[in-house]
Structures are given as C-alpha cells and as structure tokens.
Length: 281
Length: 287
Image (cartoon, rainbow over all chains, first blue to last red; front, side):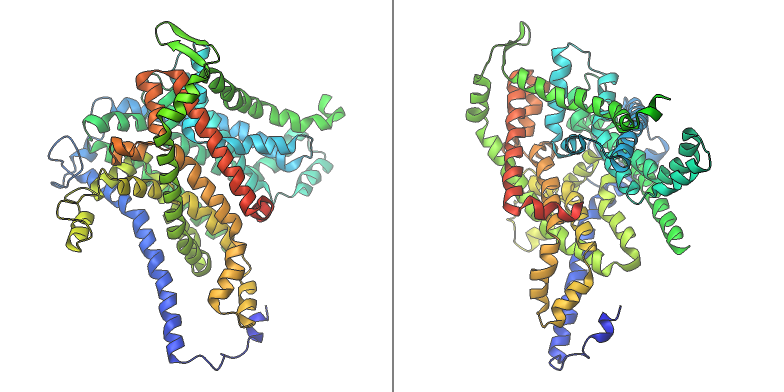
C-alpha cells in the first residue's frame, strides 16, 4: 500500500537520455507484443477472408474474386454436411459424458481426503502429457487386438478419454475457493443430501462445470490425430478437411471453420463480459 | 443409509467411473501398444506375439533420422514459441490492466479455428506468390526463385504457430501471480531494471517456463500435420511414419514399436529436464 508513496522522489541521475531510453524500452515491448498478436491472428484473418473467395481452381489458396456463394451454400460439397453432423454428435455426447465423469473426480479431489490421491492426480495428468499420436496408436492397438470394429463407438470412447482430464483440471480450478461451510449450513437446516447438492453445491460449481463442458466440446470438434487413428471409415469434419486437402480445398471448409470460430469467440466473450459484471458488483 | 455409515467410501465412489474409464482406455491401451510392438506376421495371415524385438531394432536403424528430426523441429519450435511468448505474456500480465482477459482471448483465438484449417492458412501466407515471400525477395533475404513453402522453415514456423498458446498461457499465469512489489523493492535497492528482471521476475516465472516448454515440446514432437501440409518428404517427422505405418502400410507392430520409442524418449527427456530445473522449484507455485 504505502510502498509507492515511500519510494524516493525520482532519483537525480534520471536525465533526458535515460527518460528517452525508458520510453524506447517501454514501447519496444508494446510493439513486440502487438507484432506477436498480429502473428497469432493473421492466419485467422486469412481463413475468414478466403471464405469469401471464389477460387480459380480446386484449391482455395490464392485470392481470385469476392463472392457470397460459399456462405449461401455452406454444404455445397459432397460429404461435408455428414462430416459436420458427425463432429457435432461426437462432441455433444463425449463432452456430456466427460463432464459428468470429470466433475465427479474433481469433487472427490477437492472435497475429500483419501488414500491414493497422488496416483489419481498422476493418472489425470498423464493423458495431457502424452503425445496424441501415442494415445491414438495405443487405443488403436487395443481395438485391433480385440477385433473391435472401428467407427462411431471407438471415436466416442477416444474423445471421452482425452476430455476427462481437461474437465477435471477446469472444474478443480473453479472449485478451489469452494466454501464447505455453506453445505454444512444447509445440512444443519435439515436439508437432505440430495437437496443440499441440488440447491447449494451445484449452483456453486455450475460455472466450472459449464466451462469444463465447453472446453471438452471444443477439443472434441477440433481433434484430428486420435480420431484419425481410431475412426475406421467414419469422417469427422477435421478428417474431411484432411482427406480433401490432397485433392481439393473447397472454400466451404473456410465457411465452416469461420462459423466454428465465431461461435467459440462469442461464447468466450460472453464469459468475459459476465466476469466483468460480476467484478463490478 | 450405507454411505452414512461409511463416509470414507464417498470419494472412491465419486472417482470410480471416471478413473475406471481412464484405466481401461488410457492405461490398458499402453499395455497393448507394448504387446503389439513385439508381434510379427503380416496383415493377411494376422499378427502374432513372438517377442519380435526386431521391430525395435528397425525403429532405431531405419527411422533414426525421423526421430532426430522430430526432436530438432520440436526443440526449435519450443525455443521460438518461448522467445515470442515471453514478452507477449509479460506485456499482458503487467501492462494489460482491465483488458487482460480480452488480450488473453486473442492469444488463444487460434485454438477456435480448426487445427487443420489454420495450418492450411499458412499455405496461403507462405505461398510462392504470397506477400511474405515477396517481401523477403525484395529484401534479398531469399533468392529470386527462393521459396518458403515446402521447406524446413515452413514446417518449424507452422509448429511454432500451432502450439504457441500452450507456451503463452502458463507463462502468463506465472507472471501474473508475481507480486510487483518484489520487483519494485529490487529496483528501490538500486538494482538496474535488467538485473531486477534477471534476479526476480525471471526466477519467479520459472514454473510457467517449465510448464510452457513441456506443453509445447511434447505435442510438437509427435506432430505430423505441419510436416505433411507445409513440408516435403524430406521434412517428414516420426509422427508421419507412425501414422502411415498404421493407416497405409498396416504394419501395426512396427508402428507400435515406433510409438513406444517416441513415448519412452519423451518421458526420459521430461525427467531429465525436470531434474535440471529442479521439479520442486518448478512446480511449487503451481499448487
């Protein structure tokens, strides 16, 4: 608090040159940071811009002419619609299952003391620290050794698997400040355990659970490597892009990509605004 | 009720379904990866377990170059990601003010664009007639017929780009937690700001550096999308070999052996790295 006030008045040695040096340094950092942001955002701008391109050939890599056709016919390419539908189905199902399983684990880790906590933490951490190609290969060898047919089920199982850890980490982070006295108060007031959970616990952990679920959904829609290995002949949207990239890159891919980007961005912005409003209150 | 009499069981019941799932679909598959890697045979007659250590000998002799290239590309990408991310994370943490969350959103924005699509966008950016190549040619940094696409530079740039947020986020978290009064105190004690940075800020951000380098290096070492889309056969990484052995050649034992070596190699590097940094120090503030 008083640290700033107690600081000596500007030291004598600060002359014009030192001030200029400080200004340059200060702005160097800002300029560098802005350049880094441009680097991060440039490809996104390209993706969006090229969704309005009328490509000269089969590959949408060079700018030709502005058109709205791709947006009016977003599924105007064989197989694209099916792949998007499959991606959404897998993402919805896997994120729901992973959110339930992951939230239960997070509750156990945050609220209870039990033997085996360290190994549980390790098991949660490992999938996040393993290269996707290794996880995908190992799942594939499991399915191959049992002659399990590859397809929708194997994709779903894989997605639940890699999503659980991310849900646990997200929910646990939000649960860390959880006040157990609130639950005890409810119990003292003769609420049943179920009512305590429904009326007290769940509303408190809901933001974390929703954040975990959204993250799982996003990871699932985006996953390529693991899905590619365990998919058999099924095609999710990223697999469709991969398959298409060898023979053609239709601009409709950019339309779907832009749409996914905008939905995710809006959700994140809503989340930030919500946090700002909570902070202001 | 049963649980009222045995409250100690509650955490285990909460853990059971999720942990069981991870055991069956994460740990058990690792066993099968090892099991498959020691099989021999062919796709039509079927593969049988025969302690075929040859698969591992082949993994090292035939694919040594791919392993080394993967480590090299992943190492370079991690280094570049660090050099780009640290000032960015520093700027957001200490100069971001009210806009911190919004700026962070910009940092992770690439994640909202499907991985393959944002990598394809680099094809447009680095294209032979693209603006980047034109500028480099004008500056004579590349020759008249020089190109970026289908080079090592393109692959490393793509990997750097794709995993950069994994580096920037942990760096930001550790920098944001630093009590700025510590830095002020160092400067009050007449440390130059460079010295204050080296002796206070940098060591305090070590957990973020540790987490960020691991989160970048590990997936980068297994990546094959950038090499496939932005490179040529001369840039192929070990991930490319594994996926083609599984999906195209269908030599499952060889693919499994390669995967196993990749995993073991990364695990070893992580342990050595943790030891060098001092895992105690590196993970302390993460808790």
